[in-house]
Amino acid sequence: PDSTSEIVTGEVKKIVPFDAEANPVYGRRHYGTLTSRTPYAGVYAFAETRLGSGGGNSDDLEQFVPWGVLAVYDGFDITPLGDCGAGKYIFVIDSGCYPHPNLTIHPDWSTSLVPGIPDFYNDTSGHGTHVAGTAAGGVGGGPIGVAPGATIIVVKIFDYGGAPPERTIAAVAYCRDVIEQNNLPLEDVVINMSLGGQTSFVEDPVSAAVRS
Image 1 (tube, rainbow, N blue to C red):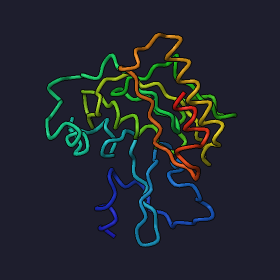
Image 2 (tube, rainbow, N blue to C red):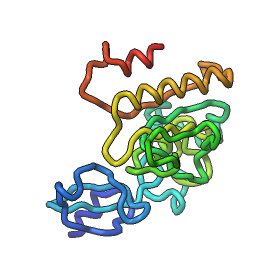
Image 3 (cartoon, one colour):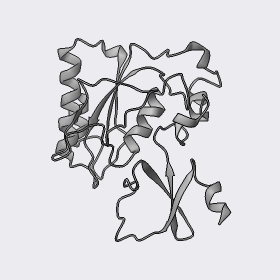
Image 4 (cartoon, one colour):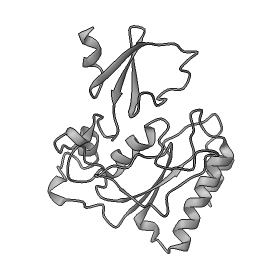
């Protein structure tokens, strides 16, 4: 129905019946770059959302500031400031990140910790690309990020079925090593982990790794 396209951000490419047994992982990548699935009336609409901060394929979008970024800056449009996040570093511990002209990805520091998937550009769910766009989408087309033009260091830990805690801990340790070995000023660095789990955020090993 027409109402399906109204609730999907991006162009609807394919409507398929939803089979929970066949598609157990939210956001699993199907049909090339089609990564986002929105439930509606028993079907999933596959929409192309290769860069975050509002969805859609930013290759074909005019520059815009998503409402969330406006909220961060109290309604101020930061577009005239250009890539004002340049010189800052954002580690994105997630599912990987597609290469994109409006993202500055460090090719040498980025890595994949997933066995059997060595390519950190292989975003197996699309989530990491969305997060990177939200964080640092640059000036030039599509959504502006919170720190446009910041350098993204991709640390891929998720395959199609998530990541064990020890891989997350290893990712935090990897970020720490990159920061220390390259003498990055801590005030210029963010480690982003848009992920969840079932353990305590006070005493669990991942939190201990972050505090270290």
